[in-house]
Image (cartoon, rainbow, N blue to C red; front, side, top):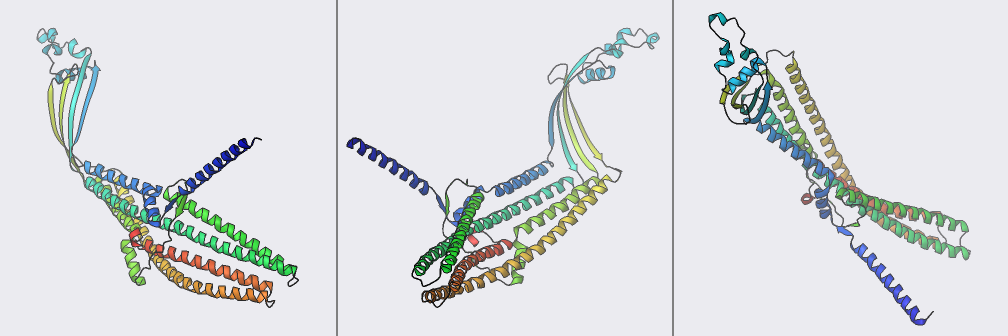
Length: 466
């Protein structure tokens, strides 16, 4: 190969490698690094669960507009076309068009008293009559037995319930994001612990290999150390998989495609919640958005009873109508009609009574569900409070255990090197050291989650309240 050609090929290869490196760098640089507040903001903007709760709120708002509209007059416009040769209808249509004549009564066949028994052809066989009726009609309800008012009260209760449901959904999303976000940090901490254990165990294996070659220890010690190394590598793989799973879960919560690179910022630790158990329970019963939503749903059930009872009372309304009748589309033969209506169902086979009983039973069911939910929230508050306190003490204890395990592992390592300790003691000390470090990570995660769970129970899980 010509030297110049070789230099050109090397130059092209370098260009390709630099380009590949640049693309790799750009790919890594494109990864989003989102802090907790950014993750929450993204989830609140894109999470599908919140889209559902907002749609439910929109439905409730539309229901209120529908119920309020029932109070207003109803205006309808219509155009009806008719063609008939029915004697009665044809004569009526001619009257409506102001076109009736004496001849329509058969006047041309009337010759005097002797003709009174003759059936007039024009009246009995009128021929085809066309009519176009143009109508405007207004109906106004005056009294509906509480039906309209009940529908409005129910719609307003559903709106309040939907708004509280939206708050509850927001806080649940924040809690889920915190779990996934801290899950990433916890998994990475486990990865670091496993990597440190892998490095320490790998070094130990090399040292024991040298000691076996020097005849200081037996080969079974080396095999035990190698098994320990493989166990640590399995733990490292599990930790890496847990990290990937936590990041995938965070992708889903944020509404970000799994293929898009994502990284997390600094870890978050919710502040402790102050207050006695009784105070926290009272706060949860007053402010938990799920309970507020259920109370408003109970109000909607009470309005449902009122709606069902409306059929027990009379219905009163007014009507005004303007008609135009012509043999073709137009506004000839104008006429108006004014009217009022009072109707009262005297007997319907207990259909209305059954509807009232059904609505009352639904209200009783909702009341029982609310009581059940209040008891559940009180239990959740006590459980989260106790677990948060436990996690606080456990974290302090685990941090002390790390110092003890580190010192113990260092001592046993020196004793083994001097031939005083056995391989079993050495591996046990290393395992205890790894466990102590992992326990700290687990305690930190539990503390963050339990504090967030307590805030969720009392309805105070918002980014600015962490």
